[in-house]
Length: 279
Image (cartoon, rainbow, N blue to C red; front, side):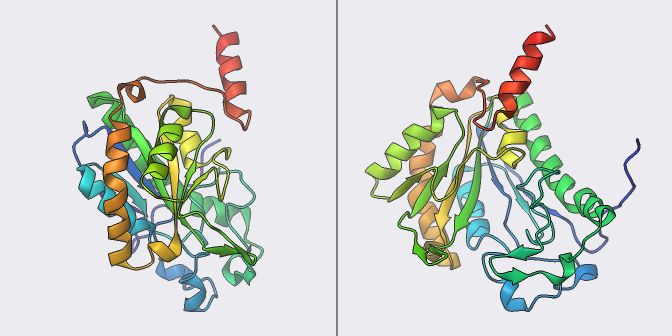
């Protein structure tokens, strides 16, 4: 069946690409970099203040990503649309792909959203972002060495009244090659580190699952606490602290070899079994 033809919004490029050498060895991505919305969607019926909260985007993550990429001399791919429009870090069939209620805020522009409208948003925003990530990885892998992929996010200092003590979280699935040494190095540098906190890194269909784990690449999701990166100055300072720690860890040669490990979601375990059965 042919997919509907939904051309990109004429006034809104869904992807920000930061150029860098293809042999840099690391690619930075930022799924929730922006709270921007194309003109045709207005504010999705929300007051502007709601879009400026964490429900609209990952506060500080874009600045953190740009700074880390600049310090590493590496490429980066960032989204240019709000996660409330469509969440690029969810699978295309995830029920939370287009949120109608987010942290107590009803999103009028998403109420009763039709399947056709969801597919329109997938085609115009979600898919171009995922394709940009995929194309960057493929280009870097073809040039060599295999890239490490770091997905940069941020999290709220409190959630439902519970204070989150972590300054930074490292989210990962089953590949320990980068996650465990990085967690240890961050702790040694004085960070309060969450190991798969405040979220679990095994999320079926997310960007790392689809674009990194399935390729056997080393990749993790890094979460920074938003009160530490909310301003440009604070985010850049946070990146300056992180950059040498990251650089030391991604230099390890074992990260340049593919490792196909079963996911805790069960998805890649099924895929590996199917591949084995087919020859």
